[in-house]
Structures are given as C-alpha cells and as structure tokens.
Length: 555
Ligand code: ADP
Ligand code: MG
Ligand code: ZN
Image 1 (tube, helix red, strand yellow):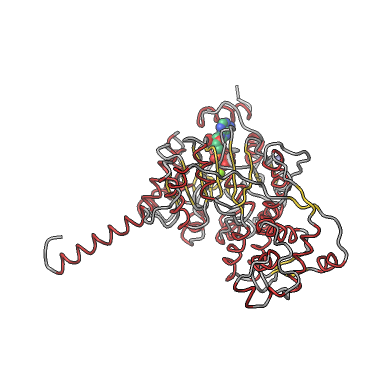
Image 2 (cartoon, protein in one colour):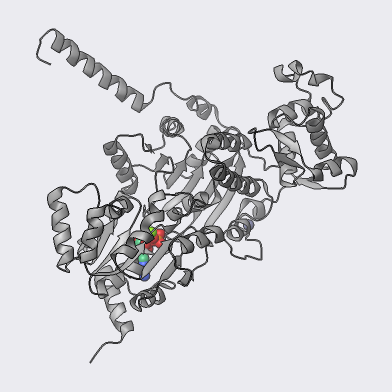
C-alpha cells in the first residue's frame, strides 16, 4: 500500500524531528514547496520556519540550498540536522580546501540534502560553477528581510541572491522572515522577483508577551530593581554600544546577578563561551548588542530589556520576540529617551540622503510608538500590517492608562519659544526657555529677555520635554532636515498659535525607583571592567616578554 502524502510527511516529521504534529501552516507550506511553487513565509520568531524547508529537502531529490546570513546560525542548524542523521553541510569561509572539496563531492553525488551557503560564498564564481553542475531541488532564503534597506539587518549581498540563483537553474524559491512590514514584504518580493509567490503569513501577535515602555530616568536603578525582581530567570538586556554592554554587565554582576556581556568586539572564544553559558543557564542574564540573538533558540527567556531606545520597531519586535518562545510569560521592557533618538540620528549623519531619510522614518515610528498612549500591541501589530481591533489588556498602556491633561496652553508656550528664538534651536534649548533656566546658551543668545522665558517655570522639566515631543507627533513642530535636532514650527503649528483649540496630552508613566541603601551603594559602577583587567594583564605579559627578550632572558 502506498502511503498518502500526508502520512508520508507525518512520518518524516516524527522520524527525523521527533514531533507528532505540524504547527500552524507548516504542512501547507511544505506541500506548496513540494509542488515546486515559489513560497513566501512570514511568521514570527519561534513559529518553526526552519522545518518548512528542512522537511521538503528530505523528500525531494537533490540538495536544497539554504541561504542564511550568519555562519553561527548555519552551523547550529547543520549540527542539529547531522545529529539526527540528515546529511546537511555548509559552504562558507570557515572550511578548509579539503573540507570544501568533500562537501562539493558529496553534493554532486546527491548525498547532501541541505546545503547551507553564506551569501558571500554564493557570489563566488567557482561556487556558482559548482552549483550549476549540482542537482538543486529548491532554494530557501532564511531571514529574507536582510534584502530590504527598510529592514533592520540590511545585507547588501542579499540583494544579489536572485540574480545568482537564476544563473544556477530555474529552481523554486522559498523566502522566510519574521520581519515584514508591508514595505519590507514588497521589497523582498520585488527583489526576488516573486510577486506571484504564495504567501503564508501568520499573525504576529504574541499573546504571552507583556510590553512596557519606561522613561529613561534612574535607568540603572530601575534595571537592577527589575532584574532582581526576576529572581534568577533568563533574560536579555540589549544596549546600543559595546561600551554600554560592558558597563551594564558589570553593573549587574556587582549586584549579584549572574550576567555576562556579548558583543562583536569581544574575543570570539569569550563570545561563544558567554553565549553557551547563557544557553546552559550558568548565566542568567546576557547583556548584549543586537549582534546577539538571531537564531538563538532558548525557549525560556523570561524577559527582554532594551536599555537604550532601539532604532526601529522591526528590530525591536524581533528582539522582544526572543522572550517566551515556550508560550509562557515574557516581559518586554524598553527604556525610552528622546536623547537616544537624537544620538541615533547623529549616527546617520554620514549616510546618503535616501538612507538618512529611511532611517529617519524608522526613528519617527519608534518615537510615535514610545510616546503614544494607545495599546502597545495594537500599535505593533498595526505596524506589521495586521489589524487588531480591541485593546489587549496586557501592556502598560492598557493596564495603567496614562493620566491626561489639558495641553493647549503648554503647546502654545513651546511653539512660541521656537518662533521667538528664530526656529534655530533644539529640544533642550526650547525646554530651557520655557522652564526659565538661564543656561549658558540661553544667556549668550539673550533668550532670557524674551517674554516667553520662564512661562512654564512651575512645570517639571520632563513634562515640558514631553510637550515638545507630543507637539512633534501632532505635527505642530518638525525637524529641520539640514540640522540634526533643530525644531521648526510647521504651518499647522503656526495656525495653532493664532487659533488654538483644546487638546489632551498624556503624562509619562511614573515609576517608583526608590531603592534600598544597599542597592544604592551597589549602583556605583566599578571603574575597571573585566575586559579592561584582561587587556591590562595582556599588556603586562607582553611587556615582560619584551623586557626578557631585550635582556636575553628566557621568557
Ligand atoms: P523560527 O525560525 O520561525 O524562529 P525555528 O525554526 O527556529 O523558528 O523553530 C523554533 C522552535 O520550534 C524549534 O525549537 C523547533 O524545533 C520547534 N518546532 C518547529 N516545528 C515544530 C513542531 N511541528 N512541533 C514542535 N516543535 C516544533
Ligand atoms: Mg529561523
Ligand atoms: Zn494593550
């Protein structure tokens, strides 16, 4: 008796992967690939995308090419597949000539079922020639958002993939990503020339994740307090710079949290060890730059903290998606400050005009998310092109609705401050003028003599800042294109000055950051870090060697 396709698929699933049923649309996707159709899979992190190309590769003749952006990711999957007896190999720059030849030989003889290729290796002429001779069943492009400049991990080599695959043969293509705003999705389809592809898009809603945005004030205290409240659970803390990663890892360590740093500037061996320690639970918290996490499959990450404001919502969502992959609770806390946004804008200074414009749009979307008082989940899902009608009741805005206040007069003050100072100043300056702070700049420009100076002296500085930012969202203010940070009044804003109307603004959430004396002491960051000490010892060792050599002594 011949088993039906369904039975055959189920058997493979059980036999090779050890699972008893498919998740979501996995089976439909697999059938689509077996039918030789171009397929576009958009599913959140942890949904089980890899299986969608791994399983059909085992059924079809020849090798499936899998393109994946990171060598670590490839190695991880190849190791897992080899462990269950599948012939999967990779082709990348880490192989020796002999290994390379073996992989090629086994591919040509039809033994290899999955051939993982780094995009850089795919573009090599000799590899293209080799692949032309091989029997290729289909190509899977994992993390396909790397194609789009609108994505958060743009990789220029990804844009050449289609052109190279077309040279090899007319194989079906399956693109997979966990990140697809409508913009990124269109970009991917255009670039891969698969506008006709069958799209399998599942909801991005992660019901078990709690989202919260906190103002970046007393951030270290808030962080320590939060991490301590998690009592040894697994978590990731993302920071924007390597320096910050070191600093925060150290801060947590001195507060008795088992934490380790992870960033691209660390020695590869240290990086791998820290990652393994985290996976093996020797370490509870990994403090990392965004270099950490792609393809990391740790199901019980209980929290993801963004210590610095991230540069796009795509990246943010991807990173928070690493929490609660087992379906249990996941806390996603982001610290937000407009100063971070300004810093990020400065990074973009040297980019081309288009790149800068793109980056600016992404940042604006981040600002609007962070400052809005709407349900976070609704905003995130909306951003990914999904409709979500009701409020989620599982985010800070739903659970602790923000206090509203009449903002008309304050907005007026801010706009007038911008007008009266000639629309040439940044947020901090406008805040100083409204608050009546006689800073060096304010005095040197004589702005302390303006009638608007000190109008808001009764207000908290943070409130004035928030009014400025909300005026940006209301499009009463806009950012000057040429001068980063400079705020100008829009036509709409000018109308508002003359003809104001009632508006409600929302207050930032307040956080209780009282800490015990013990924590207060611990919060003092030690002056040297482990990395610093190691560097110092290394230098001393070298010095000793040099001296020994000069004196002709044994080292
Ligand atoms: P993605 O690439 O979508 O982020 P992965 O392919 O890394 O997700 O899979 C996430 C986890 O789900 C892995 O541990 C994988 O083994 C598991 N998984 C995938 N499919 C199934 C299934 N049908 N049943 C149970 N677990 C599955
Ligand atoms: Mg994946
Ligand atoms: Zn909500």
